[in-house]
Image (tube, rainbow, N blue to C red; front, top):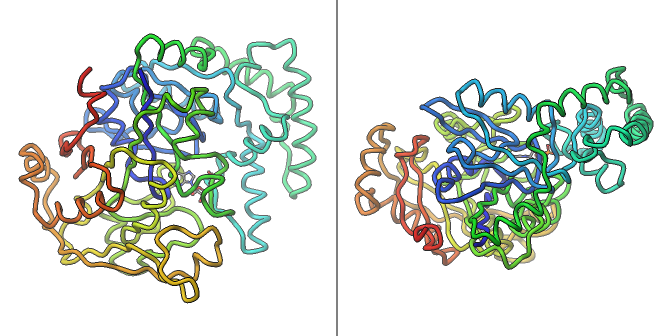
Length: 441
Ligand code: IMP
């Protein structure tokens, strides 16, 4: 059986956690293939929100979760997450890749130091400060520590001494303070303690996933962070340090490209962005604030207020080009309820280059783009219970203005809608067209 991938089509925070929560029960495994604790999704268990950073959201539904080789894992955060789930009575079923790389305390320190260094030139990324960039940097420099290295304490000393010496130089070069806790010996003893917590979960996930596929399992691969934060396809420096597009599931899980048969693109009904970087449809006014409050648009990982704006279909269309979505999922439509009119940017106008339907590669050009809007009639504001009641009656019962809006979005990618969501509760979902591969199981 194949792999389906779900990715956010904007700048992250599209509601992938909510979408995975709807889809997960159709799959044998849910897997993460990129990023680390920079990702954050809120899932609801017994009406209570649970924030997860590493663990794929589907685990809440009892589906085994795989932390793939493309991830960078912060054991402090992961172990806390496992504990949090246990306290809620959920015993997570996890498989952690022995090839995934570890985020260590000095990576987080360097993340902040380097971002502030970049700020001197007006090029600060505004990272989550979770050590993501420096961990992937170590991976590329080939000095990093992988999860599987913890299983070989006999060779760990040299690897940790190299890391200590290397990062002492880096931290002090950027004006930071290398703490005593980060000495090779102290790190080793902490890592060995942490190993006791996670050892049962560590496996060769590449082998495991490929065997599972051969044996007929269906896997949902969950992309973190959003397509426009992709290391190659977003615009430097306002991006993350991993590839976030669906294609990255092949390297990040160790699967062949033809195992992927469906790609779900998640589109939030409006646009948000955390951190710096151009955002053509940003609403720097009361309306932006209203959307932020009613959509609870505050960073899951950092608590930072998210910048809010109208839906930017140039982003979504570009994301479709990179991922070839086979289904769309539109989230948080309830948040726009009560607005008289709703705008959508369906192209950019550039003074010299004219109409642009895709995101330009350069920051300078994107900053010069003027969003071109079309206007839709709004729909009414309903309570969460009213939305749930309406959802239970199916797609046809929805307000015609809302249907116009979602059908216009889907028409821009020319792919069917899988489902739409109108609230945080699982019941606030309207199914439209789920792939037969999951319905026929
Ligand atoms: P980093 O991934 O922590 O290095 O942060 C790089 C940029 O990506 C910053 O602008 C972050 O705010 C943004 N970012 C990283 N992960 C997420 C996410 O899951 N949702 C939204 N933005 C994110």
